[in-house]
Length: 464
Ligand SMILES: C[S@@+](CC[C@H](N)C(=O)[O-])C[C@H]1O[C@@H](n2cnc3c(N)ncnc32)[C@H](O)[C@@H]1O
Image (tube, rainbow, N blue to C red; front, top):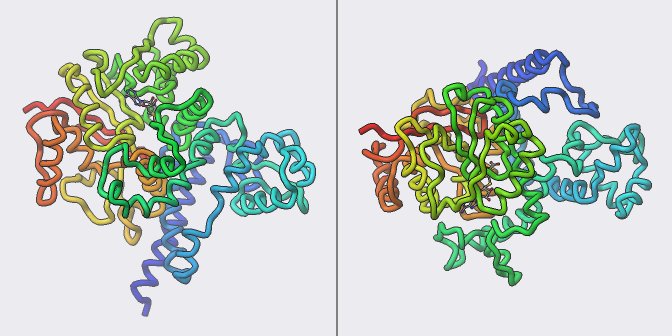
């Protein structure tokens, strides 16, 4: 007789098989076949703007693979692996020493002696770093102690915007090491204020006390380029294909950065008039990026740059779409509510607010969250895809570590959109413990687009 546990393992195997086949199909559809483990160039699909179907397949594949390993492996093995992982430190070294840039000049491979010389590092230590990364397909040993780039290591080149986002993560493990201390410190433990972030806790121990947005020129450049890379990491360009932009004529990019999403939007939809709004220094930086990457929109006057502070001012009046990408997750509830309230003041009857952030889900059904709003993983997988949703849940930790802020559940986002004030928010959260209530003012959610890991949530002015 087959027992239930064995049946579940069999179903996980089936999910792995069918999701891998779906991914293979997506690569084949591109007309370029499946990428090889030894590929030394990007696959055309790596650079495509709509990879939603592939990403859905990978979410299932990764979730099922991790769940299967965790069931079948001894628990001590699985749990020790949680902490026994220095891939992040090796990646940091590879990127800062520009190892991928050097190997790019040697497609046939370079001996580690010559490589270590070229990047001015110790040979045996460089070898150990490369071995760890090659274990996961990032760089490959083509002959003994001769290494070459792979499709994965190309991401670490200095020209890569994704590489910039990897660099942004350099100091975060340091904040993570202090996380428990912040949770037991009298001053920080129960605070949800930006001023009490684990980042500031760590920096203050070193005598430094600077706000995250007070970046110097080089850090700001890397950060803003990293945000362009963020689009590729999260597949955020899918919104270009899956939101009905033909029904929109004007869009305001709130906290636009240098145009990570609005530049591709302007290039793909020339009918759109776009307003970029961010802090003054960033808006200046944005104009340089637009000159370079969207010269047509600049020439035709389809884009404007209006500096503002979203806590103190409203954005420009009466536009169709107010887009907030990677904005609310930077801020605790009180600040997020202020940003939305300032937008709400200038919305016309047909204006929409689009919030694009990661969304977190419980592993059991949530009251008030319709099942059509997001994809659920099939049994016996965890409802929220488990490790298939790794990025969203780690991103929540990143937001906590840097800003003392968070990614939110769909219900938390609905409440933030609905309320007019933080006191109303707190009252709603209280009510939510028992049942879901619809607020009688503010913004209501009208549509959710599941982009895998991140979601775009459309809000409109409540009609009653
Ligand atoms: C995480 S970035 C997101 C940028 C862009 N939306 C993207 O996804 O590429 C947050 C942006 O908010 C901007 N920002 C921070 N504080 C702000 C404020 N008080 N007023 C306006 N913009 C602000 C930052 O300058 C930064 O560009």
